[in-house]
Amino acid sequence: MTRRRPRTADITPSPARLLGSLRDVGYDFVTAIADLVDNSIAAGARRVAVEISCDDGPARVVVADNGSGMTRARLGEALRLGSIREYESDDLGKFGLGLKTASLSQCRRLTVVTRHSPSYYRVAGATLDIDAVATSNRWRLSEDTSEVADSEAACWLVGGTGTVVIWEKLDRLVADDGLLGGWDRRRLRSMADSARAHLAMVFHRFIEGVPGRPRLRLVVNGKKVHAWNPFAPSERHTRVLPEQGFELDAPEGSATVRVRGHVLPPRDLFSSQEAFESLSGPRKWNRQQGFYIYRNDRLIQSGGWSGMRAADEHTKLARVSVDFPSALDELFKVNIAKMRVAIPSRLRTLLERAVLDIVKAAQSAYRGDLKVVRPEAGGGPRAEHSRAVPAPAYGEFMIALRAAAMATGDGKALSRIFARLKKEDPELAVMAGLAVERAAGGSKKRRATPEVG
Image (cartoon, rainbow, N blue to C red):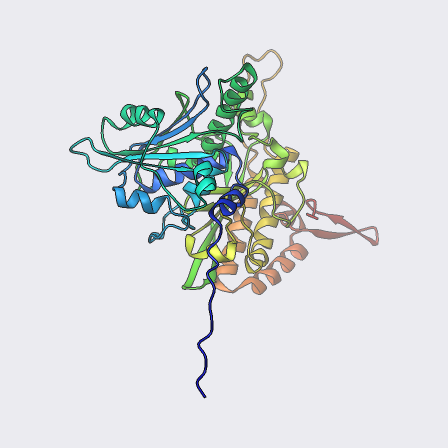
């Protein structure tokens, strides 16, 4: 008996419906702009300019870089959903969707113009228009670019290689696609400010300089973006705790997650009130405490304890950098918009002790264990800030000691040593941040730095 060949059916998705759905994968305006900057960095750009039109013409957004540009064939592939390309281990991209989904989440017409040759001016351009796709219900790119796109290309690409991305039909940003009214202009100016602040945070390492990459210059509406480093490295009284490495199994072997605690100074030890306000961050002090999670030096999560503890006024000075490579993307569950990650359960267990140490150090700083030297009455100008040495010195030493014990597998031995120390030298144990019970009049009285809930 001859077995009949199984029948198959073509279930190619409807282009019009799929594009409509992809507009809502989770981007907002600033994260969509950041995704385009990822592409520019991957192309080796040293300069990226973002222009958000706030004049009386049709609304548009332009993101231009001086990276390596693309050939015509490469441009067509870049505008394919799920583009086919090999990602390097330090690439910021991941799914082959970012340029399209980020752009179309904010506009209905996306145009890309690019120059690949440094020796002569020849550009390639293509447009993906949602309305045209909806009309034909076919995946079609057009090489007919608008006058706006041609003008922008001539402006940005005449000096050398690069890529210009133009968003038009900004139905998600302004009331309509006609001339901008006063409300629209104010909204776009506000969005330019928000984009500048977001890019300053997400790409602060690239702006400051990452080994092996060109330093990045970012400009939004003509204003240079200055790096916002959440760890206040220029502040004299910032405490940087020892880095710890945690090895996790990955699909292709294993990779290391690097964790480092930072304790920012309390208000009166900052160099200025302006510096203190600036370091409060976009969401302000209490909500900016916690984990700052980086993938290949690009910030994805800025603040929050990822469910490991609650935000607390007394720990608002604690910020923890967590660096993971792209090899661990599956474990960290990076989403398409690169806005969210999840700390793997195995890493959560390993982080508990480290987080506790960092939180104790932050509580100590908040309580005022870092003292301010003030002048005597009538003694002239205010003296310079300085640290109270004992508590921070012991705290940093104890954190380093715990990290070393974990790395060498001697954690249990260290616990026994701590128990002996608390018994034989309670005062030293208290300075080191260890809970101590002392006998007083036949009863036990607890002396310790506050425990963390």
